[in-house]
Image (cartoon, rainbow, N blue to C red):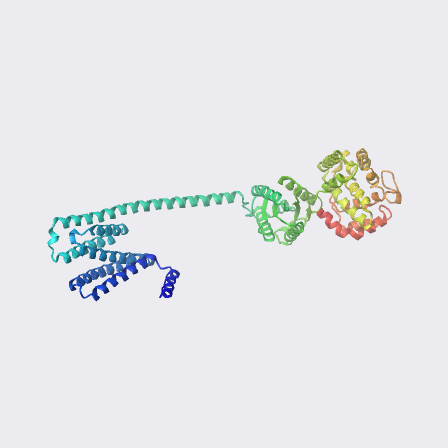
Length: 589
């Protein structure tokens, strides 16, 4: 039996039967059990059984009324709850009526229980269609109960009956009225609360929309420059604290002004929108893609490797190149392309603004030399500084002096600064191909980076002149190796690189400057610099001519073997040029 009861209880819990439902069923079962006892007990009078059956019949009529009333006015769930309430009310009426019948009629102390029952019923019924039947039913059942007790209607004309009736009715009506007022006020408060919540929700949504619009570029639907600055500072701080890499790509559409002037603003905006879509398609979900203004875009890459960032940059360049923008065939180049600058935070800078400066520097060098290309920023000077710090005889004052000199050169002639980086890469590649030892390679690195430092003594107008130089200007240019030596000589520890700086413009046939040295009389490092220097000059755009491609530059070196250049060094460079040329264009460290 216990196991069976446990199974029944578990089934009730699993089916999640309403506890009110269980309560009412229990009362119903108990009442039926009482009826069975009464019927089984022959000592009880038949009149009592009849009276109880009469009460039960009245309650069945009441239940039937409420059943149809609730079914017409309620939803399925509410209908079920109303039926449960009706059953409970009917059982309570039956139980209290029996108590009144057997405890003295009008003198019964259970009249108070009847009052409480009506109060409870009145508090649960708010509609007129429910209140009137409930009140009438309660009054009728109470009257019938007293009739059965007194076996006549003599009680009906007594003051006590009417006092009790008025008390029952007054309490019931007042409870209904107070409940209705309270419910009405509660509903008004709920409506006001709901309206306030809806208003607050609407304001929140509007604020969120305004916030979204304030950080969104309307043309591309990407984040705008404001968001870029805020998010870069935030992510830079996280990268700094989390000790992970943070990448930054800046994209500039080449010749976009020319394109926009030809196709018009509407089509220009469409081209910007399509470019934004390309960037979103190629980037990760964690990357932040933004439009920085005009024809420039920015991508913040969180926790990314250098190889992955370079791969993304190449994919962007190729995708933009391959995309068929409407009207691009009318450009001078025949196609709309993109130049990209890339910088990566390794923990070597303190502020996000420095990362922006680095990516701007990289992009500037692309635009200056090779459009439709990529450049990764690398601070060659930082590498040199580390080596100089470890070298004997090199003081911090000397390092600061060199930093200042290079900064001045960069400000006056940005070509010279980027040119020195590339020449260093070409020269080191040649030196490694020729199996030079580490000490010689170190001197070659310093010499390559400082070989044009003498241009600090030459005016900006001469360095960046678009036309042909006159004799005076040309003589000034030819003196820059001497100027450079004059700067380096006072700096202890750099004596070994002076010959390379002094003679890197000598020719193998003796027709160079400043002293006209010939063949192997020219220092080896100077001969290496001559090849690296000339190759970079030929493959870089200058104000007075367009850049050669790599093949054309190699052909020019070949044609000058034995005349301008050492044949062995040209041959060594040819072995490594393809790889080092691509890396130098990217400035990959």
